[in-house]
Length: 253
Image (cartoon, rainbow, N blue to C red; front, side, top):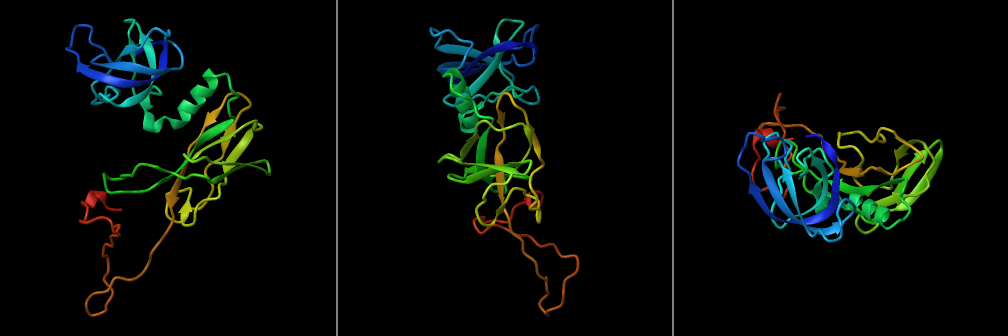
């Protein structure tokens, strides 16, 4: 849905209501969330404490599944109807996922210097909730984060929440080279310990790049029958010890 930049704020959802379809029913207009403004970053006057945000109902219409009581960083646009809308293509996200964005917005609002490169370093662990299910990312605090460019290295240390920031980096083609915990890697592909694809960093603005860390390990052996003979074309499943039942075939790795 086309529109102009609207308010950006941290807000708590007070209520959510489905709207009846009308002749003017449009994308991102089928659900209304009443949101309390907890912290504003622009687009709202100080006297505004609650805002109606319109979104879709889900099912492929780019709607955001707002829930009463949840806190979101909302990046809205104002549509031709004069109302504030938000969809999954905006930067709207739950507060649990908005740590880096919140830090940048607060620094910009308070007139502080913005970092050249910022992000969060966290470990991703698989589970069996879906074909490629993942547990919530686990931040890696106090990790030495290193980036390399043109034979030079720059270092910083992630804070207690796993957030890192570099200031005043020169432009160039960079790659990450952090001091990873034992038994981890930057790639979730088995046997791949190569650096991530290099990325370009310009001289203006700040770039957000989260670092995803994965467990690294392998196991090999033979599958034998009761008489000690090898079994051909046998499937081997590795199930985490915390899992109590064998997952469905589509959930196996």
